Length: 172
Image 1 (cartoon, rainbow, N blue to C red):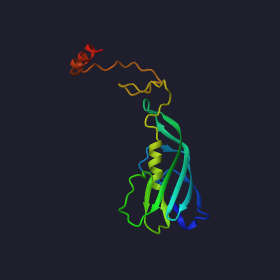
Image 2: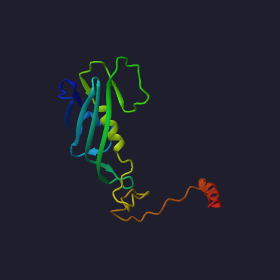
Image 3: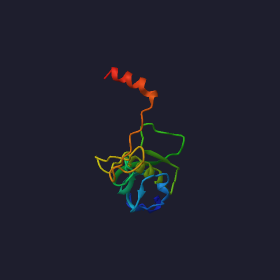
Image 4: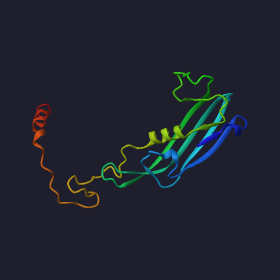
């Protein structure tokens, strides 16, 4: 995803992208995307060589429930802002600008893939649940306990942990 700096009119540029399954920006992204995500990008040029990019993305992704592994549709919405600045020396780094990305002098386009990917990953729910009362899977046979009841007996306890269990019971 690129913003063409030669098309900036009146100090502003607006572009809408669709992030579809298989898009390179999704490389390494685990949740499935069934419908394209919408990315609305607006860029302002407050001074020559400085570009402020504000972006909003949203849509639905499908992730596995952390307990039973059933697919869960999760709505994601995210706003982020990044400042791109042309720098004469690419060795210079301003420690006060966490969201600043340096550009080569006289750059003609800005690649926003990395920032989109980073923010998409940050918005991902690490522990999605299909339901707060999800019972998970049987640790013995692996059946989804929300769908069927199994007659498996709990696994016998490993005796190597008994000393630690006794120590814990002394303090509780």
